[in-house]
Length: 128
Image 1 (cartoon, rainbow, N blue to C red):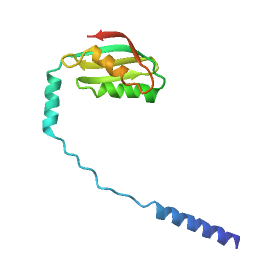
Image 2 (image 1 turned 180 degrees about the vertical axis):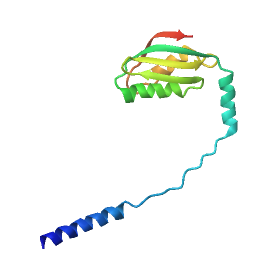
Image 3 (image 1 turned 135 degrees about the horizontal axis):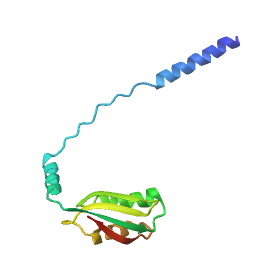
Image 4 (image 1 turned 30 degrees about the vertical axis):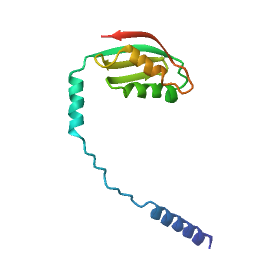
């Protein structure tokens, strides 16, 4: 009797598992890219004169809240090709178009990224 009860419970468990694991197929999302925007970005990159700035950021207290936010804010600036913020070393490396931005613009973006914290930029070096 106990064996039949255990087999019955096992069977119910397997059936429940199989019925809850239905395949959920969704149609793939189709994305259309605006060629005008892409070609304007290509022109912007072709006419750019890039330089790299390296500087120390003081006042960061965490990797996700501070360093990632600063990196995101730098990266979304018009004229920034790449931005990387290393929380451990308190170091930022930004490649930017000198026709569009200068180091003061980068510094202002970092210092205005604070939401309660105060960030300071030190030792800005231009790497050619």
